[in-house]
Image (cartoon, rainbow, N blue to C red; front, top):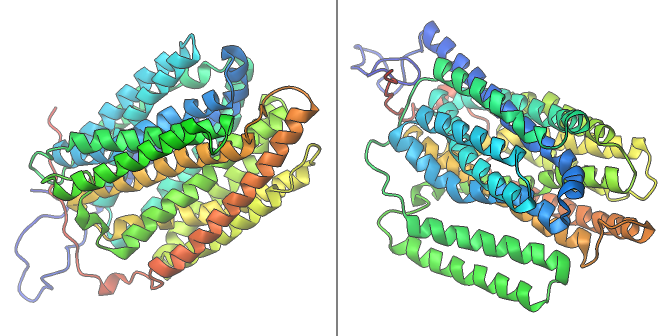
Length: 505
């Protein structure tokens, strides 16, 4: 049966190395890269929408009459659904077809975007965002699984660099596109634009992505573990959001935190005894995989706060228009676009650890610069801090992704990419909720008047310094848990390759 790389499974000829794969045919190479193009286009579209929401939040707040906690849940409903379901989605994609899961996720994402754009209330919008997260869980886990299964370790960093670069373009133009849509048509079009784009993305996936699967047997999903995991995250996020309003030692906050701790303890017990586990223990045997997932969680927690809170600062404190706020984020995202593909290729040559360490140090430096933002800060300080942080993010994104996937076999690539996306979404959700607690500090920082602006700036400065400390913690983790050696193609033994099931119809 044909393999992902286009080579045929067969007996080696006499004298040929038994453990090395046959070179891929030119047509197979073209097929891999066309598939990568289709996947990166979809990632571009999804990230464009996701970052476009950030600059529309003040307008959503004004139209729907919600506070900081409600704005956080507009983001966190999406990321919570992703964090809970991306691992089960990866298992289902491995068992029943990655392209099938990818397309199904896109279809649900587009339908939920229509519901979000037509939402008459904050509650309806939050529910629609949760459905968007369900669809994105299938698309996100399948996309990385397809890339991981299609490229060898020696090419994977470069492929992920292209993927990360295209995704970064979505990050770059997302705030600006969201600003223009909000300015000209209203915030609802930030969501409605996904409907035609989703249809085009589905067509591209059907044309260019071949079907593939890993394990043939039913994954036997542990739904009890999934429910417990959902309870852990929901309780923890609610506790952090609640802390922003009523304080860290309030009875409700403590009760929710204890609930999360109890549910987590039960989840660990269930996972140890269950025949089918939510997280395959074999995925975490490699210390680099563990380290990469932990770094993904921490770095995403830091990165996402720039996209969530800086637009709020620019509009609510400095009085920027929505278009000006979207444009002001371009130094951050432009640096990610430029650096991410370079970092992917660099990590193939010198190893994953060096660019990650350098990137985290630069990210911490950028956050420290931004922590000095005040009520009347000028453009040079904003541009300099965001650009410095952007270079750091660009350096770490694809090397962390590659490190997380390097230690897993291709027939488990859906699960391993699901674990990585879970780490990212948990980091995103917890990062926004934690920073929101620091920014709010128990006061109405979104209110009008000098007092509210002063409180917002003070909380933002404190939160950015906390994020800088998290980035420095990531440096220590990277040094301790990631290897420093480069990948050497001539020294690698061929890894197992998943069978491919060609799509029918």
